[in-house]
Image 1 (tube, rainbow, N blue to C red):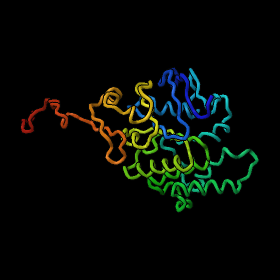
Image 2 (image 1 turned 90 degrees about the vertical axis):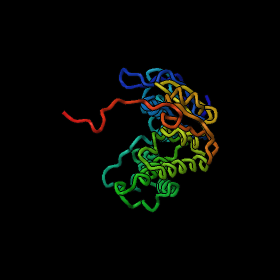
Image 3 (image 1 turned 60 degrees about the horizontal axis):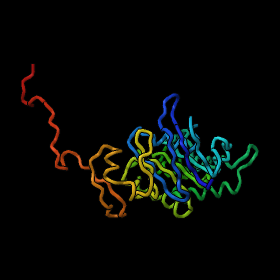
Length: 280
């Protein structure tokens, strides 16, 4: 099989509850893939399966031609990094120490910290614009700074594939763009293959080379944003009346919601008592 990461007919879930059912996807090497879909559709579950954090009850996840569950943890960690939702650092940990944890997969039991480790940490801090934060506690940082530091830790691992679960959650729009621009730099400059879970369809369409659209644990569409983001697909997946127009900045598809008050649809009347009605 070709190098890279893909899932073949995987069923993933928790206990007896299947969340993703017999789903097959391929992550294009050297590209940015974004997984989108409504809440509870299985986006994060699929990402956890690709990252070897969930064992499929059916099918297999393949990394460079090998079943990831037949590979050692260290072998997977040297090839594939994962940044989960809302990671938490130990209280009082310095930024440089957190980023240094990304080097653990490169160390055997008796290995000492090396110049190569120092170089990898320094390069990760520089790439994410966090070098000036190296001596500060992670607890002191803003949300955007903290997210860049976590990305630096993943970069210090120096893997060719990086999976990130909702890396822009709880960030304001400025920091969302900052993080996504940073990830795009990594892809363009270093050729890192990225797989992201995002909620914002328009940001997904702007930054992704490849989209995976899910609903109810199933694959609805997969491909380039221009082919996948259509009015009919958005209506089917999200139940949202919409128009798709070109993004005036990037030219990628942009979803414009219609809603009851701006699309010519009558508002839903909700019975209520007059404000002046007497009580009791």
